[in-house]
Amino acid sequence: MDEAHRSAHLPPAEILHRLDTALRGTRGAAVAVAQLDVPSERLRFAGIGNVGARLLEGDTWRHLLSRPGIVGAHSPTRLPETVVPWAADRLLVLHSDGLPSRWAPPADLRPAAADPAVSAAVIVRDTSSSARPVRDDTAVAVLSPTPPDRP
Image (tube, rainbow, N blue to C red; front, side, top):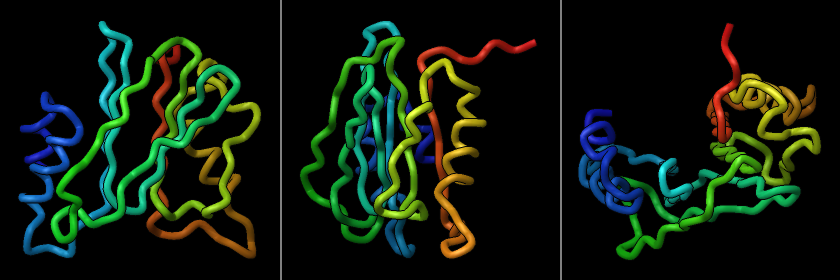
């Protein structure tokens, strides 16, 4: 979406407010924005709707909460941001509500374990079963502190 690109330099809450305006007159969307500031080693997060974020800090997983609402239709007027330190032991998993509500990150998911795209694919694969196939709206993105080595 053009508005997301034009607003990329703004804080996550402001990006969501601008997207709210841009999506007026549509069905709206659930949106989360995670912004990594490498020089200051900070991660900023804000979300609206059924989108989740889990942050690995050392050995502990922490939920980053999205606010109820729909971007473009029913957005909260006040949208606090979560600001957390970003370091080599951090890993961020963003996901849509296509994952089961009781989804838990795998124990072996670590920043240096694999390419973030492979980690996202494994999460999608492992959260589905024949009784609960992957839903068509399942989306997972993984952010690791350093990109994997490329040949």
